[in-house]
Length: 139
Image (cartoon, rainbow, N blue to C red; front, side, top):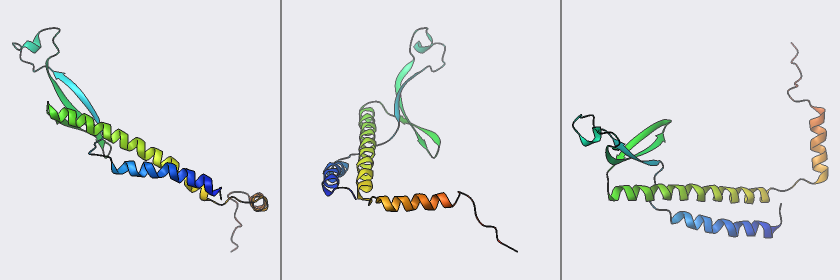
């Protein structure tokens, strides 16, 4: 087992991460894309060369069960809310990654370390039995 002060230091690092999880607001994964489209009417202004077309329109895409799902986001306040929700999702994901890393370090520090004689016995036992070799059953 590691030195108690090392575990305590890791716990001091972990606890604020847990507290920050509670502060996470509404979130959603995905990418918000600004799109311009041409309607196809020959007399429309979008049919002229060099014009971007109608828009911008916004769509949110993300994967659900291995398939890409697209949702139209209306112009205005909904676009800004969606941007904030995506940013919050990224913040959540980064925070969870950091929490997992610290938690793994704590778990590793709590594992008792094998002393030299235990390690030698393990090596000896592995040396005696080749991997995959089993005695055959006799008929």
